Amino acid sequence: MLVHWMWLHLLKNLTPRQKKAILQRYPDPEALYRADEKVLWQMDGISTEMVDALMQKDLRPAQRILDDCTEKRIGILTYYDSSYPGKLRGIHHPPLILFYKGTLPDWGGRPAIGVVGTRDATPYGLRTARNMGYQIAGAGALVVSGGATGIDAEALYGALQAGKTAVAVLGCGVDVVYPAGNRDLFEKLEQYGCILSEYSPGTRPDRWHFPERNRIISGISCGVLVVEAPRRSGALNTAHHAKEQGRDVFVIPGNIDNPRCAGSNALLDEGAVMVRSGWQLVESYKSLYPDALHPFEEQCAQESEPVAPVQRPAQKPKPSKKPIDNQKKSNYSVLDCDRKSYTPEEQAILACLDSTPCPVDAVIAATGLPAQRVLSLLTMLTLKGAVQNHPGKCVSIK
Image 1: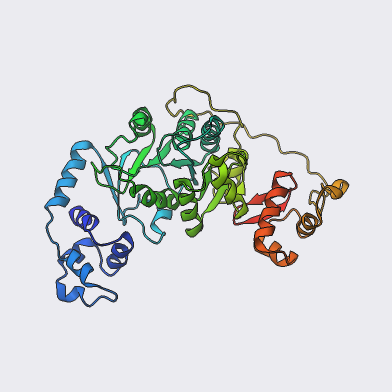
Image 2: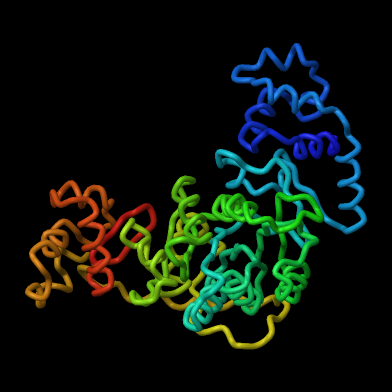
């Protein structure tokens, strides 16, 4: 029963990872609820604190939350529900319950892309976040963000302006408007998209909620795009979660003299993929979602109010281009005429590459250069337009 899911969700002194591990030993939370203390002690790795928590059998707090959700029209997803995000289910410590307002998207029908960044963004960062949200959504992907002021909000507005749905993951209850200035955004998301949270209705936005929330943004997503982030920021925390979860990390390059971009630029040195447009990012998943993704005109989102999603008329397929002989590039295909402009170390890296994506680790092994040096050189070659990044920490000649 749902009340037993809520009971397990509310138990204190148990982490999400512990709850998941314990639940896997029982058919459902009701069976766990009915287990007596003697049976609980038979589980491997059980502790006194865990048994004490599981012996708290009062269902009244759980029922109060269920009643509150009914009154406020808040939906509830459990870990076993078919509508629970499939990719999120596979992370190490997924939330057992998600609360939501709005309409749940088809999680498996298209790639979700997390778009995150600093609250204190530059005008360039805000404009870029809105345009990337617009272009990513317009190309058929699902934009997921945190709903904070700054980069998060602009990315969500951009997706809505493209006439698409979007998802905000909050660090408070879905019925709590935080920050207050985003009330209009949340109302539009509730109408045209979805708001998610692992926190019960009425939960205030405590500081420690946001690092926990970030694992959900990356866990839902195929990849995470960082637009602007200082060296200490929640956006970098989300990127690190993404790496741990095996997700791709993308970065919009920023001003090297601006500390607001120091953290996101540093991700490039760690192997993140640099992107300049929404389709460049989304195209990475075309082979996985061939029917959902399509090229989208790289125009900018207008500085107008978001509009309701609309059904766009199907476009006629463009005629295929005439094949060109010898399309495959060879080493230095576009660089032969300008080799002298590259340092000996850069030339050593370029000599290892062709048009086929190559793992960065293989480049490091082939050159014999220190790993950090290779990452820095690859970043410079990318900025020079000689090398392009691919998901899965791969690179190729551009």
